[in-house]
Image 1: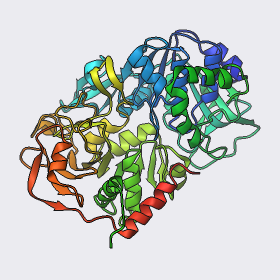
Image 2 (image 1 turned 45 degrees about the vertical axis):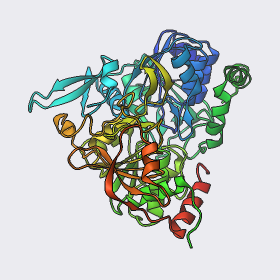
Image 3 (image 1 turned 90 degrees about the horizontal axis):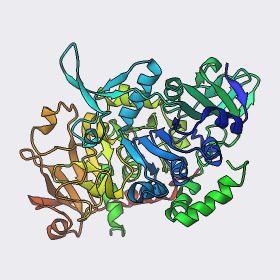
Image 4 (image 1 turned 90 degrees about the vertical axis):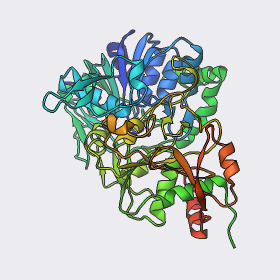
Length: 272
Length: 254
């Protein structure tokens, strides 16, 4: 049964230096508050895994938490590039960042394989692109029945996956709805998991389209109202598109970025 | 009398006209999303918009900023997981049209959205990367590309093949076992290019009003093939412009 913890306790217990850490949430339900707590606790040498590293990974990378990034699309959706990510790749600032790059279909299937207890996943993907040239984690495999050549990618098994959801009950059963992305697979693929929620309730009232993660499949749950901002939690908040647009100017310059982080993340426990 | 319009508006309108009512379209964010929503709001009310966030049949009444704005989930026929949208919907070839943008494009319609200049580990410019595009380009029935035409973008060779068009020419897609048809049409701010049936090389077949072949050639980093008599596109109608501008005004609003 998942333990109910504070966000600071959850991160302290479950996210360790050098870990492979997946923070998932596909545009919706991105665990920003947990990412900020990881930054405040000064985690280092993380391998950060995420299909769509957006602003939260820009912040983690710019704060120097990451050694390596495994991803399929690193941008500010609808706005442009991520400047801290770019600075790390192009100028090794604040430290070099190794990349392992995939497509969305490949990353999604890697999580599915991890959740399924399989060593790899098979798909039609990457064919004819330059992506396989740059990682040994994209290979081909012949179908044993037809001989058709398909693509194989290894399972993702994060040390810890962190996701945000709308609600949990006191037994740690987690309920999310709306765009649920790859969160279920990412949690089930991981050795440990931390779920932040908008609220902890006595009883989970069913919602159409919901995904429920049973409490016994989750390591810890922490209440973090507004913990997805500037992403959103369907039925609780809307996406703060103005902030995504504003981030472009905040993050473009190292000093502006560091000043913003000092004011908005490092000095304020309550910042979400 | 014709309304005043910008080259970008002409491009978006021309792209929207390429989407047929009743087909299913996998929509990239940015220009494709704007054009697809314009099509749905004008001649193609039954266009099925599919976003990689898992929203199938989204019917937004305003332009989303991202592929996962709440308005997409709220208005979708179904919201499925990300593994499902790629494995069950895209991979088997259920989606008619893949609608993509590009940072670089070459004469065979290969697309780069990964790195520009330098080499992969030390690029001049690091771009967001692949996202869903490699498999969209591989598996959709056909691909429609919308991209501004200039020497930076229209290059002899793309610096990185993120999404395959026709590779190095005829037969490549078949040899690689790709099931989708590849780029059917490329719409730019100058005109329209289509692959030549024999060579697969993108050929200028249409010009927007007031644009010359010389302008298109000057904005292309390879020796651009031109159809015998490029057709001049119809300018945006008053209705198309009004709907497009109304949509643009809603971009990213709640």
